[in-house]
Image 1 (tube, rainbow, N blue to C red):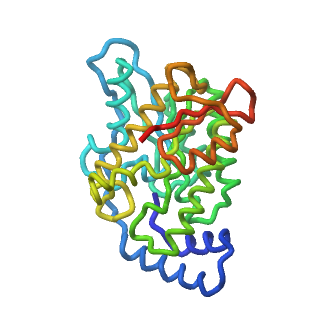
Image 2 (cartoon, helix red, strand yellow):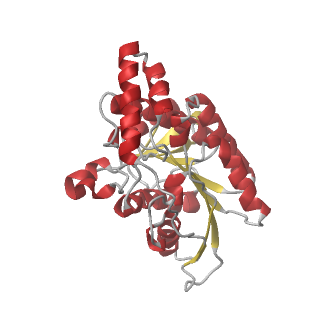
Image 3 (cartoon, rainbow, N blue to C red):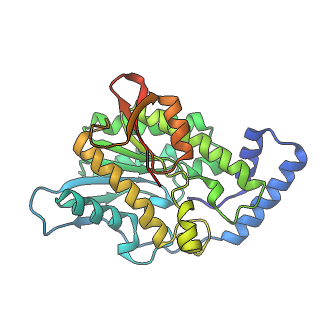
Amino acid sequence: MPSPVRTTARAAAGTAGVSFGTYVVLIAQALLARRRIGTTTDRPPSGNGLYGHELAGEPIHCLLLGDSTMVGYGMRTLDQTPSALIGIGLSHVLGLPVQIRNESVVGARSSDLQSQIDAAVDEGHKPQIAIILVGANDITHQVPAKRSARRLAGAVRRLRAMGTEVVVGSVPDFGTIKPLPVPLRTVCRYWSRHLAKRQTVAAVEAGARVVSLADVLEPLFLVKGDALFGDDRFHPSADGYATMAGFLVDAAVAQWRHGSRLVEGEEPTEQMPLAEAAEWAAEHGGTQVAPAPRGRRFAAVLRWRR
């Protein structure tokens, strides 16, 4: 996820239709939040490699795509990175070795997904399953949600044409980021949920399974408090990354076993219009949405019970 910048306030203000006075307040708050959060040049260790090497069977090739959240921004040890968390989790649950290839880049947007896929393919990586986390930088760079979702769908379709199973984690709820003061936090919550809905519809129509990361960290604040956010108060902490990775692994396991359709045994499951499913998922973190047998405009929904 990127640092909130002036463009975040401008984009959110334009979307919400706020007054000029409120817009000025949003700009000031965005600049203040940027100073509070700061940046770092530190990069986590590469998590590329084989996990579960002691297990029998042919390795599953897993490609990770996206931005700094998938990179593991802020982590200093290998076992805290999304690469390791997903690799260990998948190999443990599936009982097979998992080869992780992470092409994510700090600051990446949906428009960068194609080049990330190119990088993996050019080096001979043939992914059997791909997991994508992207969208936050689209928000701060004022990329229209419709365009951002269309680019995500293009990447999903390309991967599906390669025979790759695809899982997408929708953009998290910016309203959970404490350095963003009100009203900036309010309009950023609106913008991020709007993009999450667009991502869900576009990715499911392209053949992916989507898991909502909306507010998956928020309920755990009652138990762990601020421990779920890192030192910059914006990116996840080690506990936060582990929590998000758990939801991604759960969706990836289901995708590997059953394909994009939710099946009997993944209860509670129901079918509803895709737009309605996207609306629900954007407000309920942990919800999985996948294509339904009823047709293109319907989705099967697995609701996560807190």
